[in-house]
Image (spheres, rainbow, N blue to C red):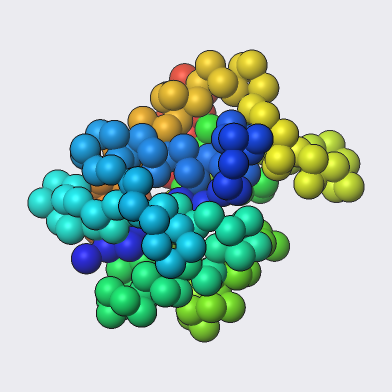
Length: 195
């Protein structure tokens, strides 16, 4: 069983904010594999299904970003899985919009959702799908940047970013993270980089 957690903030106000790209990717993945994410439990919306023949639990924590770790930990304990069976899908300020990178383990880079998950799991060796959202010109504008809606140009590219991210996640489940890295590393499409 794989636990795939997409990070974001609850509520319609934040639905298409940059910080919610993890939620959006999880929704696209769920649509592609006909997995409903309507069940509620452990402080999250979740759904269980199969992705390329592999059982997966898709989780969208419904606390705010800095509280993401609580629900992820509860599902992790419930499933009794290894840390390497956890995949976290999240936004990344250090990558240009549209860039997709895979990472096995690592630090939190100041991301409040990752900080919360690492604190609760007491382990940072889970896999990540990092989705670039770019960064503002001035550091003091970071919070408003991540909570603001995508620009018109970004919205034009967003469907393709979401579809490609879901495709990469599917490859991760069917072949593993290293194979997914090898398959997608360095390719470009419509001016954004994959993995």
